[in-house]
Length: 261
Image (tube, rainbow, N blue to C red):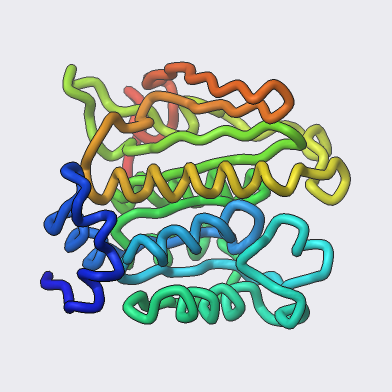
């Protein structure tokens, strides 16, 4: 896929990077990325994907912009209050980069519609704030053979990993699924919501930007993947730690006794 003269100028700082260059930028231009959630994580994620020149960005969110969102959801502004988040985000994408196509999906992601949404894209980035959606999208990515970059936010902490559960590692062992990392969701009410507990606004920016970097890295193919590694960020102490996790043969997706469909 060729770049126009304007795109060459726009992406000049990528083009001079040895690990990106023209071939990498062409991969970004032809990529289709589905972003689940246009909120705290999705806002910076979408902005950097658009700026990077990802050709098509799908946006899944059923919510509307409210005043309390603006402390961290920086893709939206005061004039956007009351608008669908996917429409507000799509307008921001066009302001940032007219060479990027936004595809809004103003729906709540559920186990029933997740696979249909996922299969039209090359890679999925999940920034949802509830466990039902996280399990639904991770299961859908496994069945549709799509890589998944997924992150979560706490009050002053965040985490990030990449799931390629439809593939095997160099040793022939299946890659871990999201259910290998978190076998089951916590009991209802065990984890307070963002509205109940609060969240540091700038932390959402950090984690969303890290998601964008991991998506770009997965598309272009440089560096070491976060597959099998969980990045944890502690904003109180400004610590970044990484722990390894592996395939659980008892998981229901690609475990020893699983039946894939």
